[in-house]
Structure formats: C-alpha cells, structure tokens
Image (cartoon, rainbow, N blue to C red; front, side):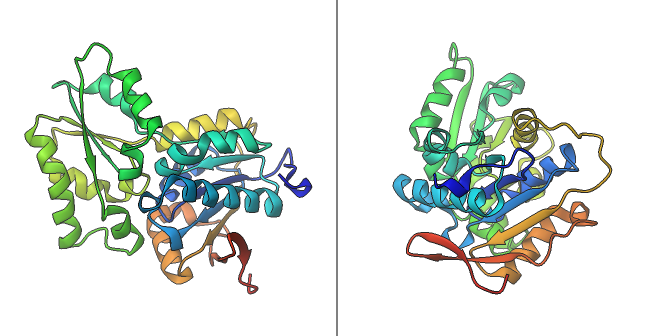
Length: 288
C-alpha cells in the first residue's frame, strides 16, 4: 500500500459493502461501539457484487480499502458483504496494514438450533459458489445430522437498493425462495447476505412463527470490537458516522435513514458523500 495508507492508532473503523446492505452491520456496530467513528462506503453503482466475477470484486475491494486508508487512516476494516468476503478477504488480509473482519453465513449457530436438522441458507450466487463457503459447510456438516439447503436469491439485494423492501413483487420473490425450503423441512433460515436483514420482517411473515432467522451482524460487530481494541464502551458521546456512495446520493440517503432509524439521530450522518469510479480508482466528485 502507498505510504499514506499507514493507519492511525486512534483512527476510525472503515466499513464497505456493495451498497446499503452493510449498514445492517453498521447498525450493530453502533449499538456495541457507540463512541466509535465509522467511515462507510456503499459501492452502489456495482451492486449487487454477486453479479461480478471474483477478480472484479477483489479489485473493487482493494480500491475501496485503499481509499479508506489513504483518506481516513482507518485502523481496521470490516468487509460488510458476504460476497466480497468470499472473493477478497484473504487478499485484503495479506495486503493491508490493518486488521480485517469479514462476513460468513451463520452456518454454525444455525446447525446448533435446528430441531428438524434442515437449515435453509439464503445467499447470493457468488457466496454459495465460492470455495470459502464450501469450506465453511465442510467444517460444520459434521456427522451428517444437519442438512444445509442452499437457495440463491437473485433480485433481493436489488429490491433493497431500490427501496422496494415491502412490495408485492418483493414478497413474491421471498415466497419463491423461502417456501421450497420450508417444504423440505427447514426450521431455520440463514440470512447470508447483509441486504437480507432489511427484509427480515417480510421473510419472517412468509416463513411463519415456527422458523428461526439468523444473521451474523451482531457477531461481526463483537469481533470488530475485540479485534480493533475498543477501549471506550461506556462513552456517552456518539461517534461520527460518515457515509459514501458510488450510486445515487439521494436514494442512498433515503435507504440509509430507513435502515439506521433512530441510530442516525445525534450523529452527523447526512448528506452522504458522492464517490466516482475513474479508471478503476475512487475519487470524490469535487462537491464533498
């Protein structure tokens, strides 16, 4: 990394995702680390990452983290995207001078709570087809008493990005993906994409009260707090949250408000900063 990428020991925490979904992780981080400064990049112009090849996702991830380190001297990075974690986490850990926390579908806790032995995993095509995910399943399949039912969910991240989290069309998609899993006996569903917790009320309504929904946002926030050496858990001063998007700024701001809710109050959150991709590099648009 360039000399300017040397992190500050008291620097903020950098978080990125392909769009709005990673804010579900930021929501958990704010709850657990209320005084920490967080810099967020939502690469909405490339959302969803699951439609891109691994080489492209690694390139996006490396450039976004370069931006976070060069501009803000972040002391740690959270990859708040399952697909980006699968494609780029190991490369980031090898190349970056700061700790990196990634995401993975909550296979282990799901296997622990299922009563039927059938766990449905809702995720992107990129996550489900990755070698990292295959290795994860191998670790927790154990003696074969738990069966994991994989369900790719194209269209759900787009619904979140476009503000269609509660429409008849999105409900139809959720039913298309969830009902076959229930028919196969799944009593536990893993929300294996950070966009999916935004759809949690809809997924819960379709699945019914007897089905457990699990995501990893809280666990990732706990890991970040431990790894980045958070020493101020009792602070009463809200930390600053700075948002960036490579997509439409106004649409991003509206989605961010909906996801963060009251957690955005008393923080200098809006307006979001607009970023542009130029020749594979991130720059500001000159108005921030």
